[in-house]
Length: 245
Ligand SMILES: NC(=O)c1ccc[n+]([C@@H]2O[C@H](COP(=O)([O-])OP(=O)(O)OC[C@H]3O[C@@H](n4cnc5c(N)ncnc54)[C@H](OP(=O)(O)O)[C@@H]3O)[C@@H](O)[C@H]2O)c1
Image (cartoon, rainbow, N blue to C red):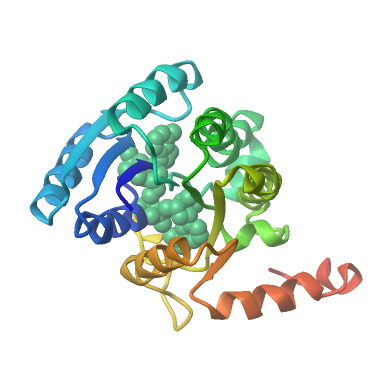
């Protein structure tokens, strides 16, 4: 990997992934909405060995600004070896049920903003004819559950979009990786009680780097989530709808 664009660079999982890529003499271009955090992550990356680390402030729900910001990133990086999309938010399901506005905002953050960015990125990557697009979705996108189906629907939408994009870009030499973490101990889940199924962002980051290298299509991380989700996906709906999940 040489030239890397990270969207949602201030996420704990992205930050750990950036640390690993920084050691590989990479040129990094970081996007996020928190300037102070971005600056700190860019500086840290350079100390760890990145050849360069630029950043630009962007709220990803500000759709009108996507084209200009991406153009600047493409111009700075030249040929892009990897795009990692990591931003997201964990909505309060109850609040979504009570407000259309909240539901739509969460769908924008967790699905539509990613899809809008990917539409522009995909055309650029298709033109260059190489590189990898890696997007963090979630195991929550595998099946709708009463406790978080707005988040699940958004992540599921993103995963289906990625399937189609992979199918399209495969012939053009561009690889698409869907990263599906289970429970990860990050600011997003700070209020949750942690247990044996929980992983550290450092672990997820190592798995992401490996999956990019191996050109995996889908990464369940940690690995045991592939088994858990296989079971969850296969519970018959007549049973599933009675469960409290
Ligand atoms: N943690 C988990 O258990 C878990 C499980 C499965 C999937 N995931 C997914 O993993 C990814 C990374 O999350 P994380 O766990 O590392 O949590 P995190 O540290 O809370 O990261 C979420 C990031 O998204 C950014 N963000 C949210 N809305 C944004 C917007 N409108 N514009 C720009 N940036 C925005 C946040 O920016 P600020 O720093 O400015 O708030 C933050 O950097 C997310 O896609 C999440 O859905 C997480």
